Image 1 (tube, rainbow, N blue to C red):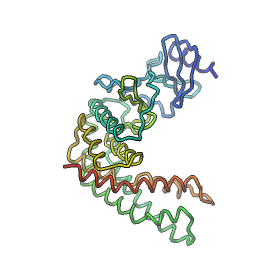
Image 2: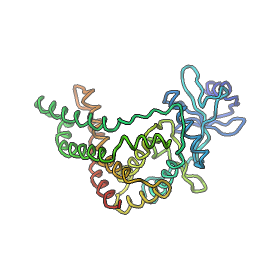
Image 3: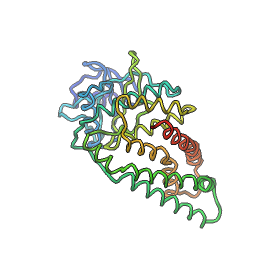
Length: 330
């Protein structure tokens, strides 16, 4: 296997490969120019190019706690070998941030706000904006939920997942309708146009292995490969939901997280309303039931049943999260 890494590093980057150590994210390579991390990219070429533009913008604007891509010898931020795309990155600190204490989430929120602020001015030929994405998605999922209920009622006998859907149907239908109303109140298309004009992005995976703590105590951010052209608030609400999931989530904690984020990236009134819409929307549960009923098998998958049950538990906290956000926002 080392032969392929040697070829990639030499043919793509002009580096000599001495040895490698596997990690969860890739291969740490010892080369004649120092340590580098080599990864197989799961995304398409243009997604990598967009992520490269995002990183370079952040770095220019002073957000340097990231792992930038090394350009291959052809000038691209990746290298293709036998049809597989590889990226070579600077090495991040090894220690992941522990997401069990409120203090960690507050620190993470401050870094997130600074990252979003430093992305302003982003220009990329590979950005793909869609001003109607969320309203269309919310409406589509609501209609699908109603169809699933009718389908369950028509078939007669219920399995475990059918029962789970019926148990939560009224709650999630109410939450989805509430999210749609708030989305309209926030004037979502206007906010997307504003984000597009400012030049910003959504990381899409600001959590877990992508957050590393350096020896200097600073928080480093990786995992940019899946980032997208979208409203940054998607990152913030996902982080708040993760806080509610990983801790005993409190009103005081939500207030401190929002204050930490707004130190560097203050929210406008319409953005605060959008945050409420995203907080109450049961995205994970609706996505999973849509996946299950569109690919339904002859028997219930225990794994899917467990995933849905866990998603339902997480969604129970969304109403608390919405209340906390409404109470702490002026």
